[in-house]
Image (cartoon, rainbow, N blue to C red; front, side, top):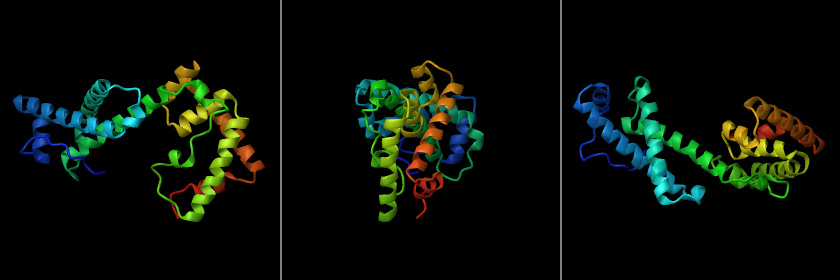
Length: 227
């Protein structure tokens, strides 16, 4: 993962200096924590601003507060895992991964919260293949065609054959990557029931795809990241 251009100070610390100061109990630790938190906040702001379209209902002041919250959570997590740093990269690059993982999770939560149950009704299409596989490796042309065909079949089956609760769970977990607890709250149910709904929906999808001559093995093969 490439580290963003986020300056900390004119004389950046070495890995050993970061570890020493963060593990100390004097003023050096206070200063190191302040510098590290500032770095994490700036990294979070840059990450979130680049993905502003996913936070269309968020004012910039709210985004800055979100960056502060994300950075604080990342800092706590990082400090609890200092023992895991092996020095295989710059310390700040290692720290960057903590803040980005948390920011990405928060983006998923924010995006899911902006969706209404009506947006998951049969009249609403499942997102296009390109949107759902935006981070996937671009396949060869023949494989891309096969993926598109299967995805369109899935879109049709999800809209036509699943119940609204099944559709909400399938799209929430498998397409929008919503946290399970968000689905639990939205459907006023339990985690176990969410997984039961997902299990039943998958069985129905598998059965309907087989009716279309599409096996689960074929789906796995064409959506793999190989050639």
